[in-house]
Length: 283
Image (cartoon, rainbow, N blue to C red; front, side, top):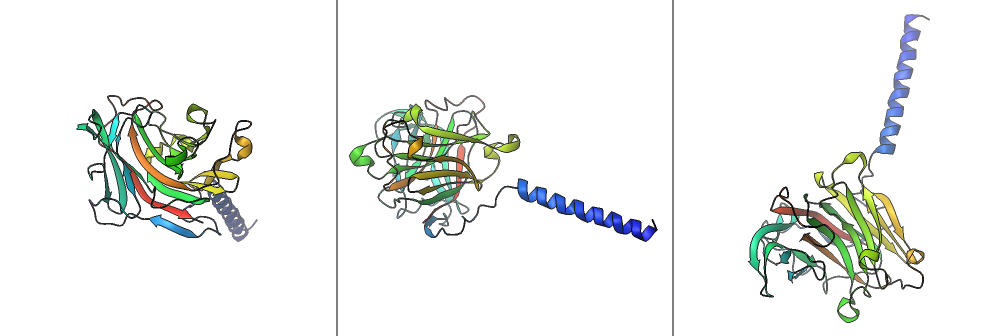
């Protein structure tokens, strides 16, 4: 083979290898999930673009106040103070602090944090509900992005329904959970699945996009564009009611301790910050 032919053959091999590398990269790379699939229309959003140190938009959010976690034995008192919930650099910061604080119930606890919700401001039946989040890290830390049935005040929990879009507990640093709770399948009996990040990645290392796509008789969970869990009426225990056909509102909170994550330990550094880049609802 002459030199020019040999060079041409090497170039062909090189081009083939480059194409193979590109194909492998395209298959293995995470889906760029900054926009949902075609067919979704944005109907509500908070991009948290208010001035730094301001509270979240009161036209969109209100606060749950108090301690104990409504049966979860959590260690924090939820407040509406900007110490615990504020805008910084176009993001919502929910900050858990280790501090002695006496809440409106007269009880003194050793941690404060925040829990906010769109209750009476916005609720939706079906759609794609997503947020770009960065969770904190450490034992005893429990951030969540979730939904509750708007009938909560009249029918109570779990009859109202609960959709946990993303829950994370600090003692399992590479994993998040998606769950539904309803009548006869609540608490430890919720219908749940976890997603483990590949390659030993810690969830707290970066922002990720968490979403559900909720349709008639189906809810699907996504992390960075990957669907990892689907629930339908057939997923429920026999004879139990599907309550995910009615409006739900959105909640964001950062709990400290509780029955599930357990307490913080000596390596859990405070303050802890749960960062929310945006929340968006699509129809």
